[in-house]
Length: 265
Image 1: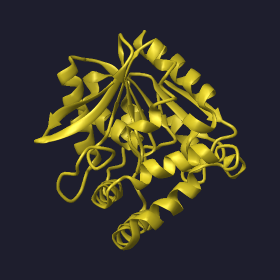
Image 2 (image 1 turned 30 degrees about the vertical axis):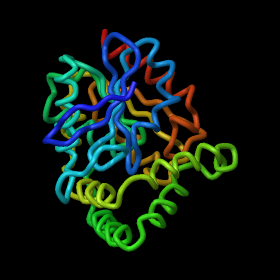
Image 3 (image 1 turned 45 degrees about the vertical axis):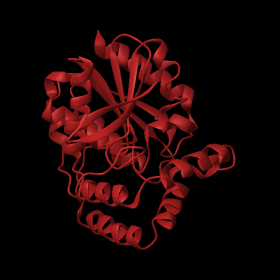
Image 4 (image 1 turned 90 degrees about the horizontal axis):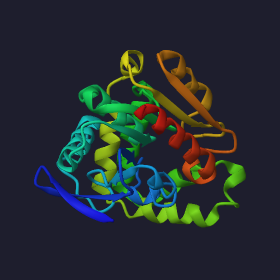
């Protein structure tokens, strides 16, 4: 069911299905809550699954000129407070993982566990920061072309024919994101903090779901994060690029279900 709540005088769209303890799904860049529609079906049989259009994405407007990861985290906290939840599991895809880590740093008492889905705790290096700044200029000139090029990199090469319909659906979702939302998020990702300390200090369980064929966030670099944690699990999606919730939907959903049950125990 699609609903809205108010945060800083704008209406934020979210969805919820299922009952019981809450699992919060946080979309990546430049996506919307629709990416979770099919993936969350079985999860909603066991938990109350909540997804959100972060500011600047889907049907939620932008605020200001930059969207820090902490700002997104505060938005999610407002929703969960409104819904009356004290503790919950958060799962973030790509940029959504950056938001999840910001949330865990700001509001650790509300976290039962976190799942980083094709994501990482590292800050951007100097070259990556320059890439983000160049991307902002590209988006100002031709946002549609920027999104097309990005979507082409998200799926493993071997999956592009298999999931051609799904790829076009993702393309539509991403192309519907307004230019200012893309720019604000790019600036927020560029300027985000390194949060390896969150992984090191966490007393709750942490999950990594990573694509072996991910061209956006290479597997070998991301897998090193597991050793930083006191209590971590790693699920390797051998046939996936950056979109494991589509490329290996059943395996990824099963892993997240198992992890969420563990986190709530």
